[in-house]
Length: 114
Length: 112
Image (cartoon, rainbow over all chains, first blue to last red; front, side):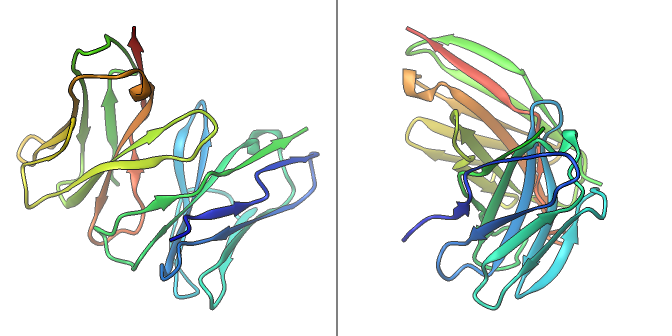
């Protein structure tokens, strides 16, 4: 089975722009979670989608949003980019929405905001 | 909400020796505890996980122990090899919440 794929792998944007990142989960997985990883804050949960519905959201401003499509693929969007948004954005998929389901991570999208 | 603390932040061991990384969690409802390994330029990779109905789980050179009473769990790597060098993250998740809360990570270096 193919793993979680994320596109693009690298992205450079300037302050004030917006960006859309894409995640394709493992085939058959219906849950997708997004995380932000920075050296200072570590791995922080952004949100999770299951069957096109947002199930949970982390403590991030409304500039961060996401959605999930009927084929379980997910996108996250960051509007009005700030320098502090520079990070590795990771997507993880799991089979269902159960609390003990294993999450499998993609390679991430490295976003640099100039 | 859940809080996960991880120690040490860096760990250097001689090749062939054992490495131990410890984590504590705050939410007694947490019942799933995965460990991830992250190599440079890659996403975290699940190496082992444990659910609250067991106290220990082993997979070749890697083992995890869980003490629910004390709310702590540990990763043990025996006979360390150079390819074990990476950053390791512990995490905790409860059955009602969707999100996994990660520890701050341990950078493990294996000295030849």
